[in-house]
Length: 282
Image: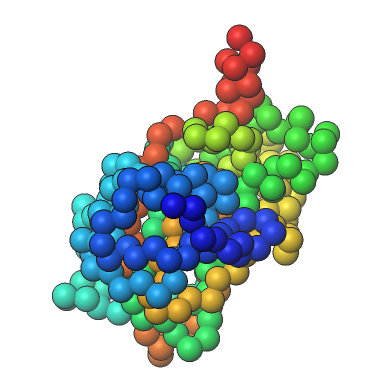
């Protein structure tokens, strides 16, 4: 069958119509879904009513589960995101705005795919924004694109302050260095790998110069024409490519309930686009 789809924005995203994730989806349809995901980086299914097992079945098609590495839900294949308590376990990341970031960018193997299912949503706010990291790289001036191909970013993890990157020297916190421009493992396309929340420094540059470059790149990532903002409805399932996008969350009233169920797909170590291009040429 040919998938029925509807674009979410010019930059990225597509809604897939007529697919019920509460039942096994035929392999040929799943292959089309995968293809749409690689083309548009972000896919939406509206009006779903799925169990945790349904969500895990869908997730498993794309690879190995990436389970939470810390907290009360550590090791679970599903994770509750929100300000609610489910079966005695408090949700993760319960309140406030979150700046743009990529899941597990501070670890050797960042998340490949993240999937959220909306169980409860507030009447306003708590929206999720996605930015295309393909387009964020492609729309940089040519001189900047050439300059940054061989750079690497140190990412630090700390959620104590969602709105400020951590200072250098937090060696006890999870951190990792990745190429600033990566080759997507499936499409081979160059994507910027940098974000405001966790990108701490550029390894090859003095700290102040590196921080200025990170800010310049983040401004381009967050440009309105590069971003899709999603207003959640109960029953939405959203899956995004964590290597081709960055995402953020808007604030919401903490007195209103917000509950989303998350699954993730484990990724591999990102490869620098410069090295990928050299290998392809060789």
